[in-house]
Length: 264
Image (cartoon, rainbow, N blue to C red; front, side):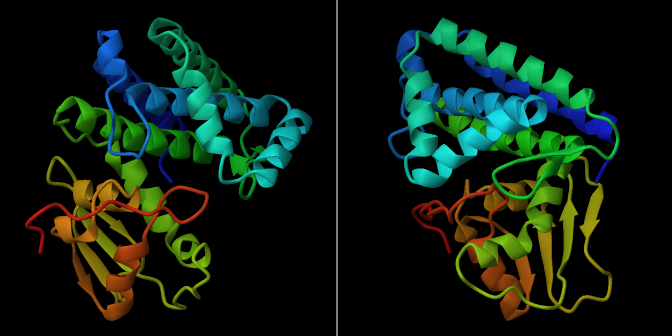
């Protein structure tokens, strides 16, 4: 993982970029549907605000978070949607204010976690840098939904390296959440970053490889694009299969996106 200070700075920058995208929207635009079924722009921001609050609770009140985790376990299919629905019902200005306050408080709390400190989460316990990386990944992914809804083409940044890292790191999880056995052998992932730099994950001698642009890989592992709509190359059947199920986020296996018309 990159330097913790870098990921905290990048998390703030990712939130600020999405904030700038929605800050001037009118009420009708907040109600615009996004690619996620039944979710509007407001639902996307509400979900981020809700998850930031859950993360803050995990960092500051482990017992309180345990109670929330029990609720999630009791109703896994509705828990996330209910949180988004509640926030989306707020006036846009109030929702935006809550998201801004929440992400600021979370950043402050994460920066205050002692080195090596860990706290509970819905999956395995998290360190502060790992949580910041996960929050950046989610902010970028849900920001993509908002951008798609508004017809905005975002410029990729070097912050994608955090999304790519967690996407590679979560390889085995994508198999396990579907009841499949992960391959025993590690994969090599070689990605070209937005500035032409090369980002590499996994051992150099691995037989199974994935190569392509960081943007394609990040869109795929966050399930914001169908495999057929990327130019990613997979060497080996196992690597190709992974690209059809990859997910960087925790929780049940997502349905992914349908291929665009005319995709290969």
